[in-house]
Length: 280
Image (cartoon, helix red, strand yellow):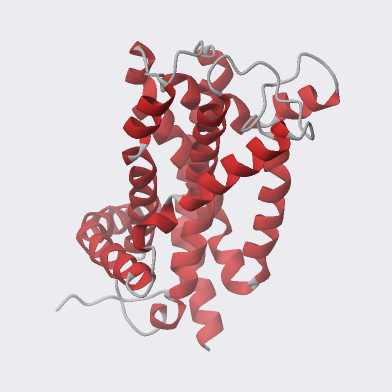
C-alpha cells in the first residue's frame, strides 16, 4: 500500500516532486474517471422518460426559440446563407458544448465533495469524468446531424477536417474557466449560479442565431466575445459557409490552452487546501 505524507509546505518551493506526483496520478486518473463518468451517466438517465434525448433538447430548444423570434420579426438575423434552422442548431450545439465544458467541472467536483475528504484518489479523475460527460452529450448532438443535413439538403465540405481542432478548442476554453472556478465553487456554492447568469447574457452577444452585424454596438460586443469566432468556425466546418480566418479563432484556442495549464496547477494546489479546511 502506498504511503502518502501530506505536508503544509508550499509545493512552489519544491515543484519537481509535485510535478512527478501529479503526472503519476494523472495516469491513474483515466480509468477511474471513466468509471465515474459511466456511473454518473447511468444515474442521470436511468429514471428519465426521454433518456439520452435530454442531451439533445437544449440545442433544439434554443433553435426553436431563435426560429420563433425570427419568424415574428423580434430578431433581425441577417442573411444566414444556409437554411436558418440548421444555422441556429449548429450555433446552439457549439454553444452548448462550451457551456457544458465550463459548468461540468464544478458540477462533478461539487457532487463528489463528501468523499474528497474521506477517500484518497487522484483528483484529476474528476476532471476526466467531466470531459467524458461533455463528450458524450456532444456526440449525441452530432449523431443527429446526418438526419438534419438530409432534411435541409446541406452537407459539409473539406473544412470538416478542421472540426476536431475546433471542438477541442471549444472544450479547452470552457474547461479552463470551469476548472479555475472549482475551488471557489466549493467555498461559495452560488459561484455556479453566478456563472449561469453570465452565460445567459453571453448567449445574447454570441452569433448563435444571427449573423454578426456589419456595424453598431452589437458588432463591437460580438467581436470582443472570444467565443464568437470559435462558434462561427465550428458552424462553418459543418456547412458550406466560409471558414473564418485562423487569426480570428486561433488565439482563443492558444490562450485557452495556456489558461488550462494554469487552471490545472491551481486546481491541484488549491483543492486539497479547500477540502481540508472545510472538513476541519
